[in-house]
Every structure is written in structure tokens, then in C-alpha cells.
Length: 409
Ligand SMILES: NC(=O)c1ccc[n+]([C@@H]2O[C@H](COP(=O)([O-])OP(=O)(O)OC[C@H]3O[C@@H](n4cnc5c(N)ncnc54)[C@H](O)[C@@H]3O)[C@@H](O)[C@H]2O)c1
Image (cartoon, rainbow, N blue to C red; front, side, top):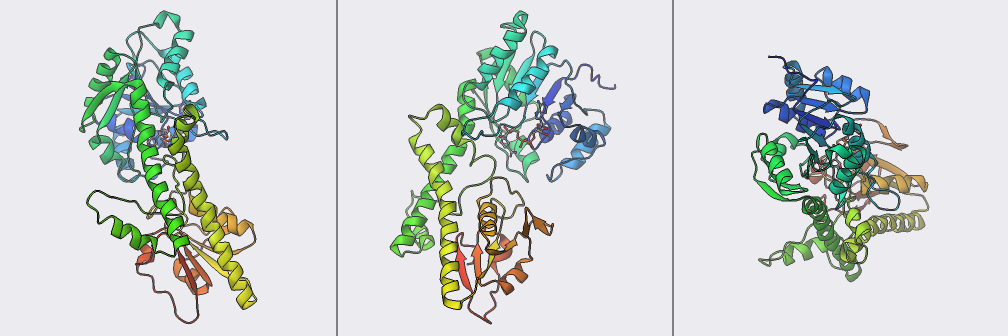
């Protein structure tokens, strides 16, 4: 029987890294899914059975589900039993959550809501967002007061393994009341094989923020140690390795800061709402941001010393631009920031990112890593990509190596 998209089971608002794989997975587990995105190019691509994001195995699944008629994309929602929201939640210049996309997605579904519907927010959101969106719905549709079920369920997938993790990760599911939690638990049970943990909406919202704040604080500790060790004339890597021999100590690796669209962003959602209490979380953000500036200063000082000694400006290889090893994701990347900053200040930068195929990026010329180290006077390792591990640095002249991430053994 052909599914009836005038009445899908699930409408997914937002078809990006989270929404599209979730929509395809739900379709493969028997739901009839209408995916909605405000970007018509995204919608057309998906309806052709293709995808607009890089994620292993996703294209095959989307193609199969669209061909079988279980997944369809559109720019407008329709009436449904369940509505899910997975739209962006960026941070504002004032370091607060920008809820404009969540609010616009909510407004788009409001005309289609009927009594008994379940609305689930998956976008990373500050505490109270689910209640706020319910208030919005009830203000626009007062006849639905008390008749809409609503829940928050955070997502914690790893890009590159999204389909596997969507199915196997455990989930915290928090309704605005008991019955909403139960309805959402039943809904997820059909496509999540991992454990489902019931809670309330405010706790579920905070769970996601706390997961990322916890990582941020732990990385800040490692970054702070790297500054202290540098001043004390101690090798921070040896220090951490030896301290981690303690059976109950596990210090993370320092780096050039913290990047990505989650860990570098989400802690601000706590800080902006709990400014008096979230002192450690705020300081961790500041420590991690400062580490990036410290790396810039180190490279500049080294360049200055080189110039004084040799009477010429050094060529600097910026080894790695992604926000973590072995990916091509540049979002909020401190290493990209460092390379761009030095380039904009007039330094001679050879930018290297083995996971990107293009020749240039925002005014930076991209170099093959072997060429770059051949030409460079200063080699600054900014990301510990696997390509750099067994690199042979030519010994034809003295090159200065600054390894901020222990990319070399
Ligand atoms: N990507 C991840 O690894 C990840 C992990 C955990 C949580 N999250 C959270 O999930 C949410 C979505 O992230 P993402 O990475 O999928 O974002 P994304 O930018 O990849 O995709 C979001 C999509 O939503 C669309 N959109 C915007 N407004 C809309 C509206 N009103 N109606 C319909 N579509 C709309 C955009 O056009 C875009 O295609 C964010 O809150 C993010 O913080 C992401």
C-alpha cells in the first residue's frame, strides 16, 4: 500500500546532520516520514534519493527509503501523529542560545497540530525550551491546551558513525509530563535499540549541555596544565602520561583550544542562564579560548626570534586546520583560526589539511603536507592527524618544530 503523505506518522523539521539520518532510520523501521527543510535544494536533493551531507552509508539508506516511498521531503509540514524538531541552535554574539530556528520550526507546525499529537525537540536547547515552545503552541492554539504531548530528547551521535550511534546509543527522554514521557519512550523504542531512560524535559535538556560542558572542563584542565608545564620547563605530555599512571586519574590531551559546533558552543547555554553558579564552566570556556591565543603568541615569538637571527621572515607551515584529528570539519576550529589570524597579520603561512581536497580556503593557500614541511622554516603542528605521525622532517637545514598536539611520536 502506498503511504499517505497527507497523513505521515512523523514529520521531521530540519534535514541536516541529525534530522536526515534520523528521518531515514525511522523510515527504515516502519514509520512514514515527511522530512521538512526550509532549504529547497536540500528537499530536491533528498527527493532524488541523494544527500547533501557527508556521512557513511546514509546515501544508500535515503535512496532506498525514498524509492520505497517511506521518506519524502518537502518545504512545508503536513498533519501527522509525531513532530520532531532538529534545526540549528547557534550561539549569539552575547553567548546565549539563539532559539530563532526552533521557534520558527514550532510556528510552522502549529497550524497542523491536532489533539493527541506528540512534539519532540532534539535540537540542543537551554533548560526550559520545551516548556517555552509548548506555551507558544498553546498561545496560538488555545483549544489544544493540555492536549499536546511534548518531550525533549537530546542527540549525542558522532559524525562519521551517525547511523550506528542513532540506533545503538542510549537516550534520555524527558516529557513535560508523565504521559508525554511514556509516549515518547514508545515512539523511540521502535527505532532505537540502545537503552531508553525516562526523565523530565528540563533534565533531558540539561543532560545534553552537561555532557558537553563536562568535556570542555576536562579539556580546559589539560590545556591549563600545558601552560603551567611550559612555564615550568616540563614536558606536558610526559607529565600527563605519568600522572595517568595513577589508577584513578585520567587527564585528557591538551590542544590548540576547543572546536566543533557542540563542545565549544553548548556550555555557553548553561553560563548564560546560570551566570552566578556556572563559574567553573565559564572559566573552562575562557581557558580553552585563551589557549588558542597562547598558541598564536608562541608562534609569533618564534617567528620574531627567527627573523632576528636570520634577517628574513620565516615561512610557517600550519599543520592541520580541522577541529580534531582525522576529519574535515572546520566548524569553530581553533587551528583554522590560528592559521587565518597569522596569515591576516602578514605571516607567510603554508596551510595544510590532508582531509580537504580543495586548493585554497578563505584566502589561505592549501599545501600538500610534504611540500609544506620541505619549504617551511617553522613547522607548527596544530592537529594530530594520522598522516603526520610518521612524517620524516628533512634534515637539510634547521627547521623549528612547534608540536602543540603531540602529532609526532
Ligand atoms: N551534528 C551533530 O553532530 C549534532 C549532535 C548533537 C546535537 N546536535 C544538535 O542538533 C541540532 C541540529 O544540528 P544539525 O547538525 O543537524 O544542523 P544542520 O545545520 O546540519 O541542519 C539543520 C537543518 O535545519 C534546517 N532548518 C532551519 N530552520 C528550519 C525550519 N524552521 N524548518 C525546517 N528546517 C529548518 C536547515 O536548513 C538545515 O538543513 C542542533 O541543535 C545541534 O546542536 C547536532
